[in-house]
Structure formats: C-alpha cells, structure tokens
Image 1 (cartoon, helix red, strand yellow):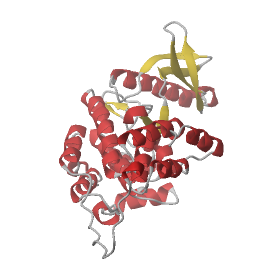
Image 2 (tube, rainbow, N blue to C red):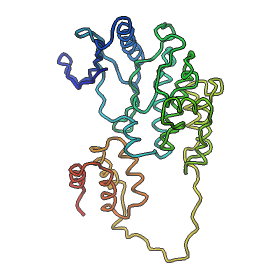
Image 3 (cartoon, one colour):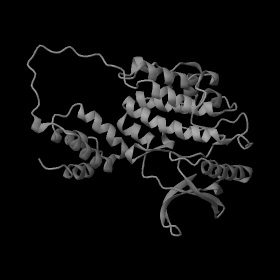
Image 4 (tube, one colour):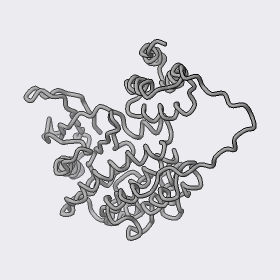
Amino acid sequence: MGVIYQAHDPVIDRPVAIKLVHADLLDGEEKDEYVERFRREAQAAARCAHPNIVAIYDFAMHGGNPFLAMELVEGASLAVALRQHGRFAPDDAVAVMLQVLDALDSAHRIGVVHRDVKPANILLMAGNRVKITDFGIARFDTSELTQQGTMVGTPSYMSPEQCMGDPVDARSDLYSAGAVLFEMLAGARPFPGRTSTEVTYRLMNEQAPDLAVTVPGVSPGLAAAVRRALAKRPADRFTSAADMAAALRASPSQAALPQQPEPDATVVVRPAAHAISPVDAQQAETALAQHVGPIAKVLVRRALQRASSPASLWEMLAAEIEHGSDRAAFLRQRPPG
C-alpha cells in the first residue's frame, strides 16, 4: 500500500523520512476513509510530542496520495532484533519497555490510544533509546472514524476486547505492551499459532505461560507484572502505563539463579594480561553496533560471560554478524594486542 523514503528537507537542511501511501489503489468511500485515517495518524502523532515517539513534521497530498514528513530514525525495529538475536536479558527487556510505557503514558494523557503496539512499531536506536512509530490506527476519544465492531490491529499483540471489536481504551495498549515484553523475555509470543484464528482463540481462552517457570533468570515479580498486563479483563490490568512502569521498576528483573556447587578441582585463574577490561568491552560494542545496531550491548553482555580474552570476545561477536564482508570489517577494528 505504500513506501517510505529517506529524503532531505532543503528549507531547514535536515534529513527526513517520507511515508507515502498509494491510496489510488482504493476506490470510493474506502479511499476517503483511508486518507482520513492517514490524516489522523499525523494529528495523533503530532499531538504526542515525546522523545520516545517519532516526530511528525508535516502532512500533505501528492497526486491524490497522502504523505507524512517524519523524523528520520537511525536504527532497527524490535521485530528485527528479536528475529536475529532471540530473547533479551531481563534487564535489557525492562529498559526497553520502560521507555515504551513512558511514551504511551504521554499519549494516553491526551486521549490517544495507539491500538497497534508491536515489535515492528518499536524502533531501537543507538544508546539504547527507543522510538514508537505508526499511530496510523490510533483512536481519538472524540473520533468516530473507527466504528465499534471493527477489529483493527495485529492479532498476536491485540487485547481480547480489541479482538472482539469492542471499544478500547489505554488498557488495551498495556495488554499489547505486556505481549511485547513477554516476547522479549521468552523469545516467543505468548499465544503462538499458525493462523490468526488459532492465535485469537488461544488469546481469548488460554493463559500465557508463567515466565518465572519457563524462562531462566526472570524473577517472580517481573513475571507477575507481565501476567497482570496480559489479564483478559481490562479491569484486572494496570490502570495506567505509569502504574505498569512503577511495577516493573519495583520488581527485580533478574531472579537469583541456583548456584552450581564448586567442583573439587584445581581452579586456574585467568592471567591479568588477558582480562577483558571495560574499555575492551566498550570498544567491541561500539564496533559491533555499526553492523547490528543497539542490540550490540546485549550481545556483548552475553559474550562477556563466556569470553576468556579480548581476542575471544571479538571472535564471538563476529559470529553474530550475518555477512562475511561485514564480519571482516568488524574484525579489522579490533585493537592490536
């Protein structure tokens, strides 16, 4: 239905993203409604001025097709990060979700419900910053565009009331945020299925697995917060994004893992000359981020648990890079020694 271009605004000399929708593929009333919905995206996002929300600069028409001029975000979506690298460490997952919840709280306070919170609409930037995008199906409290009985959203992350086509409020976004957090922690969606019908049935009738039981390192408090966000009834969820964020901050994200008994053997201490210093780790993370984006921090943290020297750390991280030419370029940045 559309395409996004990287562009340059010559008037104020800055790079922008242009989101163009080919509404001429639609006919009659359907086209008019789609153009109106697209205009609402600009209206909703422009009202949500927040550092964790992609900024909208302008809305206009070109050849009968609507377009948005938006902030150009350098980074990859959370969906890409999950697909390439699997689940996040609990601390990293919570750090991402706290920024998402801060952005949602800002939107909810002015009456905007996103309605499509999912990994593809969460962008990860350098410095572990997060941006939410695509308020294209957001519903204003005063809007009649999205009619009752119409299901809009992505089934794997939709709340039960949204699946039923019932009216939704901010608590629907909190359910979706809970589904995203579950996936970051578990590396899988809470209600998987081969078809949207199967996903919807499981979402409506089953309980998500207990993360404290199924995922090592997830604390009972964090698992309880996710479970509350995924409650079937809106009344059983958090009352606001701020409340959900407070619960995440109050619960330790990492559970104390069982300690392995010390073996009855001689312990060999790694020579200090081969120790991995914070400077070594930071150099490796900076170089890796050029090829995989903000997920580099997570990969470095994991590799540090197994690497025995700076050289082995770089080799482990190189294996995380998909293309051989990029791996070679990464290794060329390794400091000598």
